[in-house]
Image 1 (cartoon, rainbow, N blue to C red):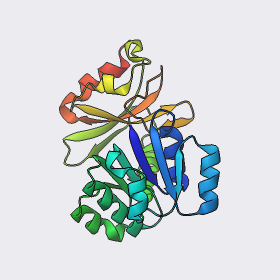
Image 2 (cartoon, one colour):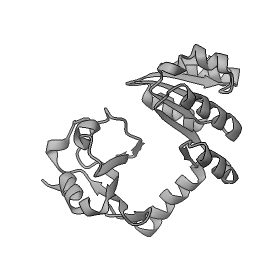
Image 3 (cartoon, rainbow, N blue to C red):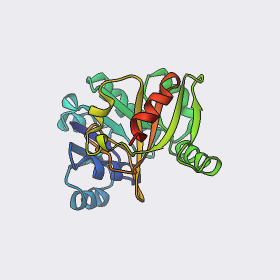
Image 4 (cartoon, one colour):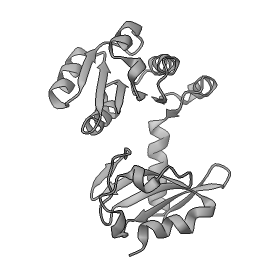
Amino acid sequence: MIGIIVGAGRIGFNLAQRMSEKHDITLIEKDKERCEYVSDMIDCYTIHGTGTNTTLLEDADISKADFFVAATANDEVNLLSSVYAKDHGVEKVVSRLNNLENTDIFKKLHIPFINPENSARRYITRNIIRPTAQNLVSVGKGDAEIIEVVVRNKNLLFTPIYQIENNTDKFKIITIYSGDEEIIPTEETELDYEDSIVILVKRQYLKEVRELFTKK
């Protein structure tokens, strides 16, 4: 896939580093020294500039991108660049939301967002309250849950996630913990034995999905 990431801070850098292994990534960063550092560290195309520079976005072939991530510490830059990406037909757009007071405008413009502070808080809370591999956290109106299971089905090992999910709407793998490594999976990510995986699953398929990953 072709992806554009705006912002080479901790989030943008780590995402670009991980995604560039299997995807064609362009990273845009306004700080020149940071841009040069990223260029030396990651095998991706780096551009010095801001995400609100439309000429720069055109040079990055935004209309050909499969996904766009705005990960800067500036909500205005993230919002404007994300809107521009959507207007140019990018199918998957995700923005970092730094100030929760801006939530309404992101929702109004239909820009999917992630708030790092809230994400970290949910992760910490989940692991303090239910530190076992059978964590269950209700989400939405109770028609879906987040479960965490350990992979023990050897038939699933080294199989790309897109094949395991098989275009189903029953569940989605959202995080993988392999040893000490936390992995945000792509379609090509493969599972290993005793990986701990976090899955968003519809309530009626809880037993079926749990058994899929844990049966020996």
